Image 1: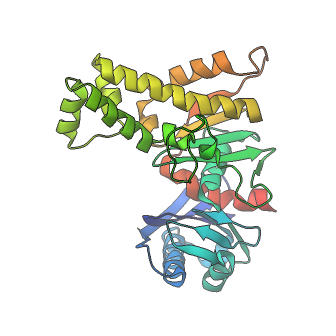
Image 2: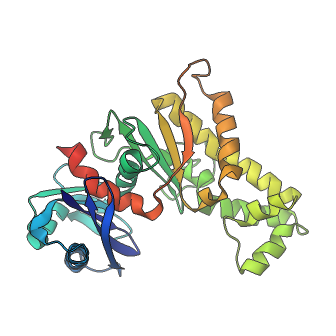
Image 3: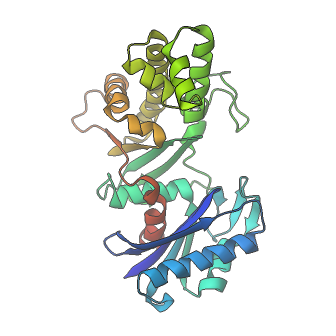
Length: 317
């Protein structure tokens, strides 16, 4: 059995043929070139999907299902109600995919939910039925799996953990609220926190590190911290507390088997993960329970979305 998994992103469209063991057999991609019309974008989605099928040595008749992950809100009829970074409003994605590919079983879902599904079934989740994936990137993305199903909510916009408030009247978030977890725990937030500390500490090693890299990045404070820089240490310690605060909220609310952390910040490995586990262990409500949520690093990287999209048939039927 083969499925097509599609990851529609703001930068690239990636399509992959995935087998029944959740392994990628072949993959193809093309730039999204947004903004442009949905018709043009879906023409390219179909083109790269067929390219992936041909690379796999298959035909479209060998494909049992097509799944697509997209930014934004997707309703139960496969319509992308709103995706701001693509300029989509009420785009009939399921219908448009069927028109171009002719496969009967088509499923469309939010991209963060697809990534969570990929990690839960094919990655670090190892088939976990109660699982949360958090991505620390430009924002804080998340997807929730409960009893093996994606949590969508009544309006299919559920699972937006990045917009839990962790600081009332705190930093302005791009969503319009103040104090969201995303405004403190995203890579964007870390860069902002680093720049602020550099202004306060003109002799910090972070200035030299940033000059050598040509910019302030999510690594700057961590690199300075490893060299014993006081300002770098303060930035990293505070940032990890912010990340941990949201994780503890998720543990207390959901008690999942596993929370996996993805995104570029996770390249810090145990420098990040070890203190996160320590904070969660010390502050969780379930401190005396024998079974505890595991906090782990994501495994699948950029492939989580396409693999999860290919798995949609398993959880949607």
